[in-house]
Image (cartoon, rainbow, N blue to C red; front, top):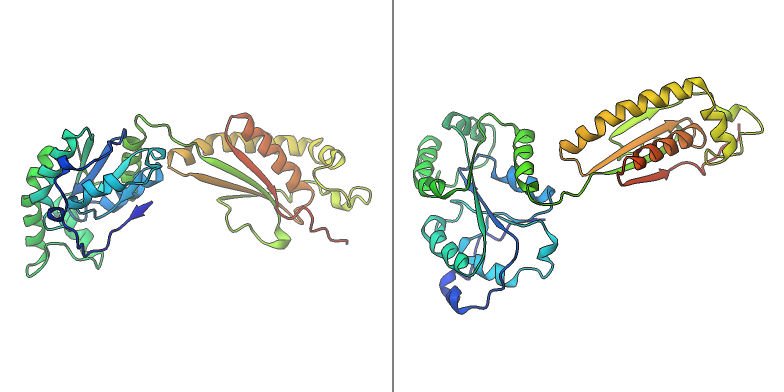
Length: 316
């Protein structure tokens, strides 16, 4: 999850006892600080970390970090790590971060600092395309605010473990960079695939990422003895599958999906829904969806199968 604290904080660090006098339970996972220049893509980076299973907090006042770590959820180890977005939205960030992080390091906490930046022209263009205000644009134009921020953040940049220039990266490319970093050393949850059979008569599944129309296959509905049966019966399966047209289609369709599914996963998708449709969703689509489910499951992927319209039988 990503949590954005309320902008007004009533309990600064001075109201807390010094870190060394507090009982802080050291977390065994690395704590990542995402910082850098405004407009460089920090929100996108946090979203990518969240997608990779990290617990994320944006705009985290550094003075509240010791208290947060003391009161962090008991199940925090269920996450891949902790990620905090910190920058000049908090006026005291530069002044206070060093002493606070050093204290926490002394208690055994491990930190990784990722610094995002972009060229001045890129930042100017990004701000011209949005209605967001630069955190330092108070009484000065955006040009001077960008230059001032660069100077203020210079010491933080020197401490960064990783510097990412996003000038030539779009949103998807930046997410890919962050996901690669996030997944390093962690076990990434594989993409889940759902296969749905449906009838075009009842509308497309709204959750479908990919739709295959199999109404070109011979329809058992027009065989009187087969009409009442569903695609889960052996007679309907044999009718649909014992056909050269079906065999050619399945071979080529499976080849296509064997190529596409890894690409979807590399793009960072957590879920992929493939919908197979025929006229009524009772015969052909049920058989083909079942074949697709068996094929994907055999590759070791976690797959679910749903026959949405199998019980919506209509007489001619």
